[in-house]
Image 1 (spheres, rainbow, N blue to C red):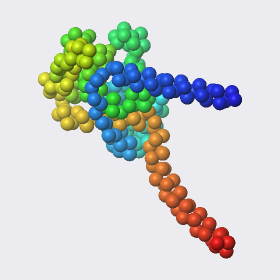
Image 2 (cartoon, rainbow, N blue to C red; image 1 turned 30 degrees about the vertical axis):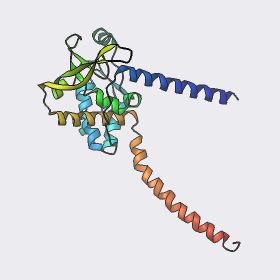
Image 3 (tube, rainbow, N blue to C red; image 1 turned 60 degrees about the vertical axis):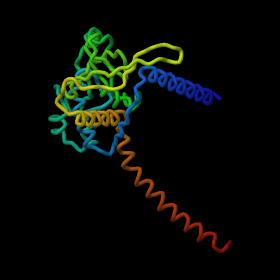
Length: 253
């Protein structure tokens, strides 16, 4: 009975957490989320995303539940390749992906220390991340000079601006059913070119989100690789069991 009671409590809390998080995400923005369409079997995309993550994200955001060596093993990289392509600090291959930023400095600069991104893809969803990283726009009223259409008044600066460039938000006023007039973002216009074309930048963000999805559940790669063999085994085993059943019951029927 005690186990059943704890199970019910766990289910209720989980459901409540899911509903609350869904409402929070919905309240953050009315922007329709774009489909990321990631493929965790694409190890080259994961690798490119890992390189982008260590170049642009790891200076502020840690991924403390992942080790460089695990990435190397999963992606078929040698220790030398991991050191050369992924490690930007004095970290060793066996170390976790932590940052050297002092939490006190982070709180002073950003208001709160930047969150660890180990499970951000599981918490937010890949479509949310894909849209968010492509939705920064110029806003001189904000401390960093930018805002985000998906996460309004976010404290994070646009760390990928040199790749994407700077874009302005296209806005229009709408009137709600209750007569309230408000302004909504309908799209973006590039006002300062970056190092990448819009198509190239979308591809880069796609790779980064693919890596973040892998980061949240690295064992999924093994499950996906093993899954097809398990299904094949079960299919063959089903045939064998069916033939055994026919042989066993043939004299009865």
